[in-house]
Image 1 (tube, rainbow, N blue to C red):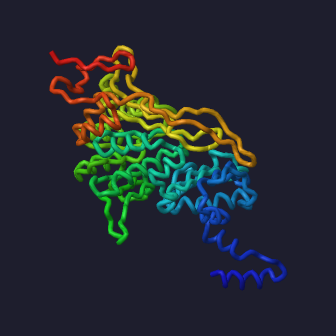
Image 2 (tube, helix red, strand yellow):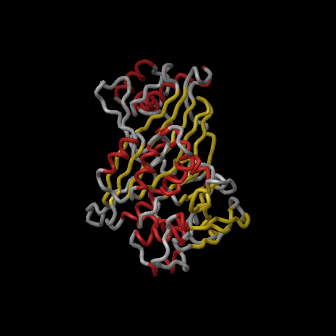
Image 3 (cartoon, one colour):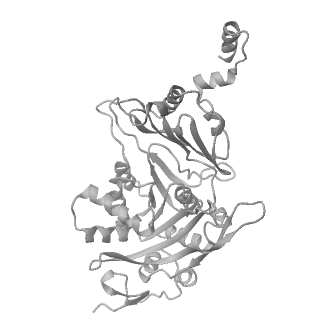
Length: 432
């Protein structure tokens, strides 16, 4: 095809130099975007208009000088990219999401939502990057070793966790890292559920290329107007229900945004470990987000009942933030929700770990860098410790690494009616 283009150009424009590769990419590829997709440091591209495009790489953010030649050129290339994910961007559907292969998510908007001279706005994000191990998370100072040990222990012994944070905070990649750590010895079976495309990759092989992780990866498939009337609409809600029939140890609805939240809460309450993520701005807003999703699904049900169910289902929230000062990603808080105070209408719980900033250091010729400490703030509750114990964790391990005050007695249990809360102290009373 390139040879044919060369012949046509040399015959039609004998006195002009033309970049054949550029012409070829405009017809069959993604124009200048291909160069960035091939860059291992590429993370995200955001088009504010056809001629104002910024790129985010591991080295930072910059406005690029190369780009589209016109608003129409921009629309043609972006429409072509959208179509790979079976999304038709036109006046009937002027703003859409699409997924390119298993590694890119594209969101785009055209007229009449944006002005004609803008052409198109878009956000292109790489989903699957280089895998990061839990050890690397510690080396990068995203977590302390004690924090990573606590999270992996919870996942191994039956405590569900919600990873929360804003876009680009690193919550999804962290979830991948911790799940990989838990699954690498083949002792747990995992069922993952994702929206339209695969971002998680938990297939782990040994040195002889034999698969050792026990994982089932699934993704949604939505019926649209072009499908047959008999095409099944496979959403996250259906896949969570399907997951229960496979008897997995861990179910991973990668991100909860709809009615799958109700199924995930129900699954956790019936003994399954659920690991998921949500776009939230704080720890407590994670629970408010789940409450909102449940109300949308089940209707006007007593708020107290719903919040008690959510807290029981997700006792631990890991909150991640990208710091504004140096763009590093830190586990800012690990929070345990213990119970719902019906009278005060608030969550009673403890911040277990917190990242505390001590200041900013500026080395000659280098960017500013935040210095701080991942600090233990309080011990997990008796309730959580007993859940870990009943999940198979040894008492001696709990005493050494989780809570030195935990002990087993026939007179105490974690049933909430037995627990009184007085500040940070928890007193367990005998059931009379």
